[in-house]
Length: 187
Image 1 (cartoon, rainbow, N blue to C red):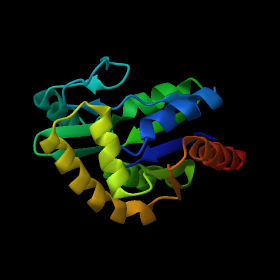
Image 2: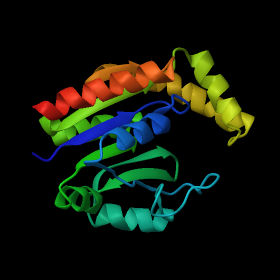
Image 3: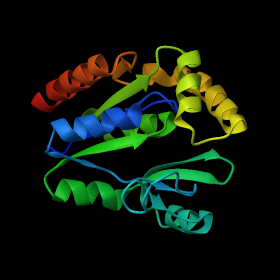
Image 4: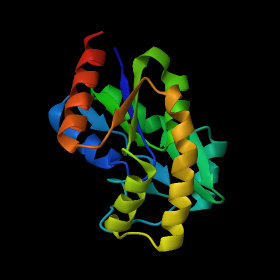
């Protein structure tokens, strides 16, 4: 059966680290590369970390109904999941792993229903999340402030996910992820 695993979290929760862990533990899974209109950060590469599009290119794909889901996260800043990405992975006989924002995660769960396991990753506290964002060193103070405010709002959506993983201790969070995925794939 074609299945998907959805990882969602507020920024700074350790979601990307946990996605990479899941991919290393489950070779029959493949990462769905999302589209975004934001600029690449650090060493991010087009087509590997994201498909980086202009807002005009993104809006064209919306008009073409090319997305499973998309979200205008901030004005002019879009993220989305291409239908072609999901088909590419399923055609290779693999399970899709998504790394998406919280609203995108809920949209994907609604779209895929029982074919999806949706995991909400969260830091042990908003203060810890703020510290992680600062330590990452990729954003200025104003952006961090905006992300923390957004994270507080996103926490209210966690009941819309199948399982919440609190990432206080990485080894424990990794074990929880692995057990959740193994259980889901059995059915």
